[in-house]
Image (spheres, rainbow, N blue to C red):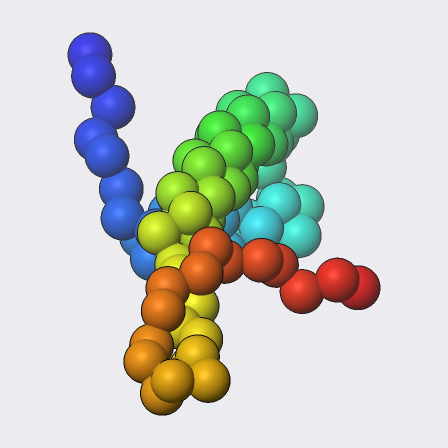
Length: 78
């Protein structure tokens, strides 16, 4: 059975649900492991979606002539 493709927002909401369930500590071990695995998959999907979005982001720079030019996105350094 193919998994339903979630939006970023839906995946994050499900991750929040998983965290709340796991923090409550009321699930048996096998269910906790299943929740952990689901959460890990969702985190990977969210990271991939963020990477894809980051690649689409471009920064506009104003040249000395007043024209706007597009330059690649460069993440901020920590």
